[in-house]
Length: 418
Image (cartoon, rainbow, N blue to C red):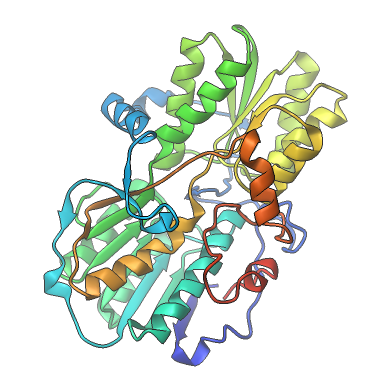
């Protein structure tokens, strides 16, 4: 998908098509290796051409002690707002005055999206469009013109420049494909004087009206590496399966985890997989052929089932493992009884940018950095999330937060993707 205009005339979300992704979800087309990021945890969660290669380089270049310490503390922070609507919660901090953007009538939003080429992003995109439907009916947003960069930095830069020069936009929403490359384009959008909402992945500027994201990559890395370290012995081996390099939230996940593994005497070797299930199986098959592997760490859960199946194929005991809140992992985790944790990069964040736009058009203050809750799913909670998401496809994410939106549950079950 390159360009979509979603206005009142298409609120019914008709003529929708499914898109390929790296997924175990049989409701999607054949898996495709992704290219540019997680772009990731991505989101979460995108693939790369670096599949199967042992990672090189020093994660120290991505490690910032102050940010690590901050996110460590934020994991137990008190969030403002109603816990029943976590997509509107935030950690108390600096607020942005948006009174200059107050306006009457429905306004046009221009959305530059990195991609919808993996299950995490597809789940969020569905939720975002259902939230859009509500705001259109409420007369807040007239239309949302979307350009999908298909995980390509240069394409997204061109998309943003198009919106600036020709989009007739009232507000920009941007989910960057990668961190450094998209920074100048985001700054150009800020220079227009219109509100700019950045979410999911960060950029190297503080010019946006608000930057929306869950706590962050360090928190993910801390939660997962502490869990593995607590359930393993000193000297045990962990294979870390990473999507791709160069995206802040993913690099921070690994930088935090690697430090904790080193502190606890856990031997960890990391590989870039491209989120390709075949590559994941090959990597683990090679590791298992040369020795025991006691743990598996992932910086995104897409492909978690393939990792588990690699141990089954080799006739080895299941590892202690961290995946993600994708339904395929939750179900396989329950079926196998392995010792696991489902870290979360809260998928419900896809609602928040449009709700932020609503507040901005009303001239209300918004958090300058809008930090959303990010709480892993533990074994004790797994059954509840499986029950709540019964009937959802494997590529669905348990903490999607769309239960109160129109179309629930059919739109998510049928993977109706605009």
